[in-house]
Image 1 (cartoon, rainbow, N blue to C red):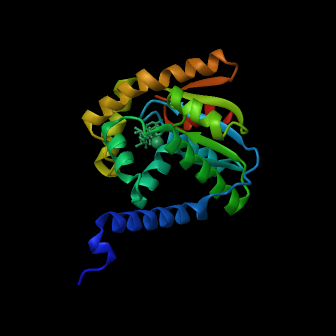
Image 2 (cartoon, rainbow, N blue to C red):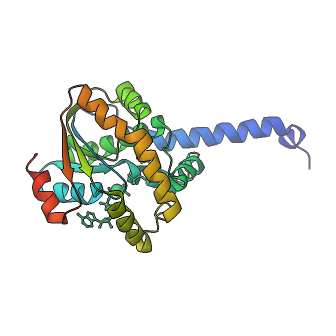
Image 3 (cartoon, protein in one colour):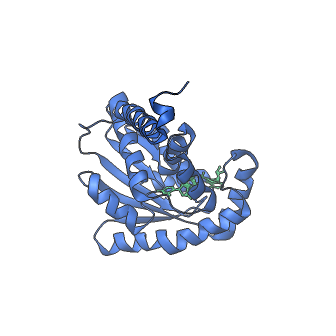
Length: 227
Ligand SMILES: Nc1ncnc2c1ncn2[C@@H]1O[C@H](COP(=O)(O)OP(=O)(O)OP(=O)(O)O)[C@@H](O)[C@H]1O
Ligand SMILES: O=c1ccn([C@@H]2O[C@H](COP(=O)(O)O)[C@@H](O)[C@H]2O)c(=O)[nH]1
Ligand SMILES: [Mg+2]
């Protein structure tokens, strides 16, 4: 039987689109927190497989108050949620390229807000961000009030990184832990992320560089001395 929607597919499409947008925004609203206070932030950088996640986890477990937020993990969670950003995030990660900065910053902002809401924490190890000048600009737009204590940069030869990621790829299930994407991630790191270290050094933010081709506990000894 014909009704208004079958008679006018455009109106029907508009109705569906608007409903989907409201549902999406409604879901986002639940995780949005507007009264996040000024927080302490340490940016943890380094090539793919440099040990950012491993060391941040140790700091979170062993030092009081610090919370690990991996930009990559937050993006993977957003992708897995399956919202309208899913395909874009998925394709960028699988290609070893960077996700648009506004999306990453929104994920970080929501992640910080959630952690604050849950346990009142205000000290964050931001792992794997910023990775480009665009990331820096987006951070300055919405997250500038936070206090960047210092940058922790892990340095490790590419041959070691490649071996670690291939090994991790046997069980990680990550779409980017395969040799082609690993090499693309190295390129992205050199072209877009390494210049950010230089940027911090030139602009008065302290950068601590630690060689991470040592054992996990040896690296941790150097890391913990900075806190
Ligand atoms: N110091 C280390 N010595 C040997 N293996 C390590 C060391 N640190 C981390 N690893 C291993 O290397 C792999 C990559 O480590 P991790 O996930 O911490 O790196 P990451 O910098 O977060 O990488 P990505 O950028 O891909 O997320 C993991 O399998 C981890 O167990
Ligand atoms: O700030 C960021 C962090 C990550 N990405 C994308 O995610 C993958 C995986 O990041 P890991 O830190 O290795 O978990 C990365 O290759 C990018 O595609 C990003 O775009 N911006
Ligand atoms: Mg990681």
